[in-house]
Length: 110
Length: 114
Image (tube, rainbow over all chains, first blue to last red; front, side, top):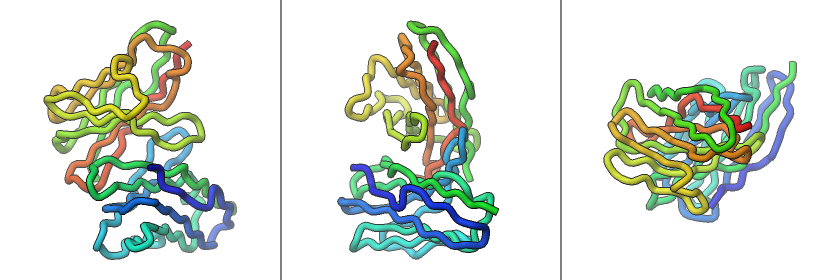
């Protein structure tokens, strides 16, 4: 079952922050975050595992609330290079395949 | 991160012909690879899971006779679109999980059927 992402789109100015949410109606084992630029393949950002720690590097971090089956991606002090479509991919407890959300379009303006 | 390659990056074919897309893991062995299809401005839809040495597992609604998958070695999986039609035009992307956790995508193949 496809996870639900919100918002569908967001426009920021350089330096502003953004939060992208991903929620599932079923128990999750892991949540994966990707960024895709137009015409290119998705690029892996990070993975959050059940029972694991909040992840992050530099200005992009993510959390995973296992009880609510929700994950959030935090983008701080956004840069022009952050523009793209962000997808979350979720994996259930008994599967090894990812199901992706509809995506969140992020546009950072100068 | 792990490197996954695809070939060709773009292909144009005539309706009714078949097209083969190759997916290779360059620096690791992959017993399992995944094939996705993405239409413009849409999400990634899993088509099938490719298993080395055995039959692929197709998602509901994906025609296995139309989208032939072969995973002949630990570094190569192929997707053949048989008797392609314009509605098969799409962005096809393969991926693999070298350690079982992170999943890495190939660069994708843009198929246009005329």
